[in-house]
Length: 485
Image 1: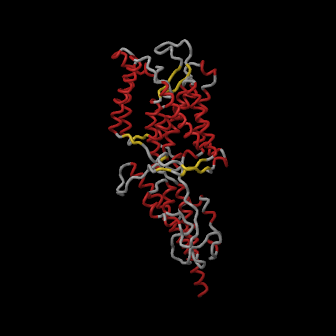
Image 2: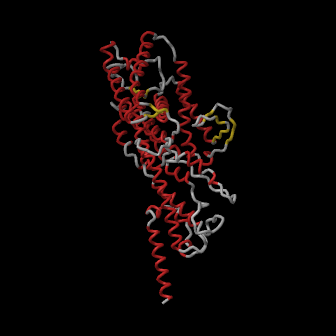
Image 3: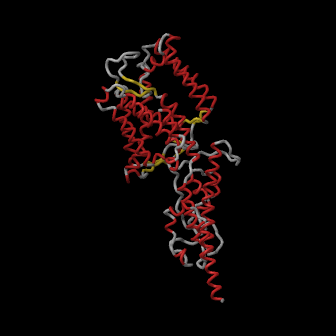
C-alpha cells in the first residue's frame, strides 16, 4: 500500500505542476527565449547547464542573476519611469562581481526597416517628377504633390515618436496662430508691394543652405548607417568644445562619436544644399527634397498638446486660408496669398513645385510652376502626428510581454536548487512569468490613463518611449492621414 500511495503522491505533484504551467500566458510559447531553457530543468532535478546560478541555492525566489530588471522590462514596453531607472541602477551589478549584459536599447523608428521603406518611397516620388512625359500630362502635379505630402507627414510623424523634447502648442497658441500668420503674411505682402527692389535673397540663401544641410544630414544619417554594414558602426571618437552640443536634457556634450558613414552623409548633405543654392532654388526636385525634409523636422519638433487644440487651430487656419486666398482680392484688391507665394523676393524651399504646362490661364499663369505651400503640409500634419502618438500610448506590446516573461522564467529556473521538484519549478516559473507580464501590462495601462488624463498615480508624466508595436496598431493615424489627403 505504501508503494501505491507513493505513486499517487507523485501523480498529484505532476498534475499540480502541469496545472501551474497551464496558467502561463499562451504568448510565452512563441517567445524564442523560452526555447533556450534547458530541457533537463523540466525532466529531472539537475542544475541547468547554461545559466550561472546566484550565490546560494535556495527554493525561495530571489532576484535572478540573468533576469531583466524592472527598468528594462518597462523600457521594452515603451513606458519606463525615471524612478524605476534610479531604483534599479544598482541591481545591474551583482555582488559576485560578474558583469551582465546591458539593457536592451529603446526602439527607434529611424533605425527600422519601415524607415528605409518610407525614405525610399519619398525618393521615388521625387524621381517621378524627373520623367519628361509626366510634365506634359494635365493634373500630373496633383498625385505628385499628394505623394510628397503623404510621405512627408508619415516620416515626420514616425520620427516624432522617439522625440523626447518637443515644443507643445497649447490651445491658446493654437487659437492665436491664424492671427499671427495673417500679420506675417500681410507684412510680406507690403514688402513685395512697396519695396520690390529689396534684395533679401543673399541672407535667405545662406539661411536655407544651413537648414537644408542640417535637414538632409538628419534624414540620411540613420538609413546610411543601417545599410553601410561595418562602416555604419560608431567608431570615431572626438572631443567637442563645451556648450557647442547639448543633449535632450540641455546638458553640454563634450565627448562625441561618429560612424564613417556619417562623413559620407555630411558630404552628400552639403553637396545637395550647395546645388540647390547654386540653382537659386529653381531645380524643383532639389527644392522639393529639402522642403519635405525641413517639414519632417518641423513635425518632429512641434506637437499639439491635445486634439481640442488641433481642432481650434485647424478651424482658425481654414478661415485664414479662405480669406487670404479667395476674399483678399475683394477687400484689398489683390490676391495676397498668391502674390507672396509667387514673389521672387522670398525664394527658397518653403513650397513644393512642379513644372506647369505652357499656355495656362488664370492668376499667376506666367509663373512657371504649380505650387503647394509647406504650411499646407506641416500644419494638418501636426494632427496626424498627434494621432500616431495617441496610438503609441494605447498600443499593446505583445513582444514586450513575451520577452519579460521569458527573462523571468530564465531567472526563476536558474535560481532553483538542484533538488527542486517539478511542482516547485512550475510554481516558481508561473509566478515569475505572471508577475513580469503584469508589470508590463500595468505600465501600459498607466500610460493609457495618462493619455486620457485619467491617471491617479500622482507621478509626473514622462516622455513616451514608443515600441514597434505601434506599427501594427495605428488605429487613429491611418484615418487621419486618409482624411487629410
